[in-house]
Length: 260
Image (cartoon, rainbow, N blue to C red; front, side, top):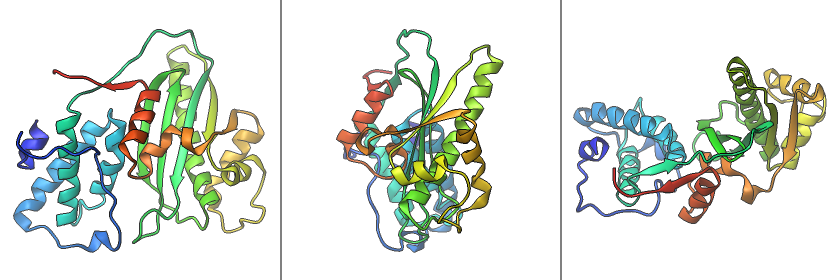
């Protein structure tokens, strides 16, 4: 409610079916917001980031809006309003943790959008961590290394997901629970780079990421292939159609409810 109030949206504002919209071209170089609206932009942007911490469908648009924090633009403000209008249709989202048998694995799903940004050619990385049917964590982040192929970008996403998964393993161990780590990717090329030792033909690969090959070589984690249409981490890499968003949210145990 505070988010909508800050953007000047009311009950009479039009509701939208999705939290984001696709933009093209040099979108980061658009018209800059007037100085008196820039502080408000940053405040609303951080409020969206807070809401997105447990609403996976908001994480990609929140990440994109945050890229304009240093130089807020009119298009960035429109992105925040798009997310706000989405709230009218889905003001309340809950995640269900239904009773399940003790689980053996932490499942980490990773995905990357190759050269997704038309300006910087950086990709976006999405990760989703699950224990059985229970959602644990999901992220959407900008890829810092520009990959030269989709397979290379998927490998970088796998590195980030594996790192997060190993961290979850250690956290669970501190709480007295032992889990094995499984990582799932939807790109055969990315899986192939992680499964072998050394650079092979991709000698330009960002070498600080090669530690992940040792993890899988020593069988500290299991690497799996998953269909692209079944990969829930896709939600953190780009703007999706609402039917695809609900399919992923349902897989992670989320549902929309009315009331407060």
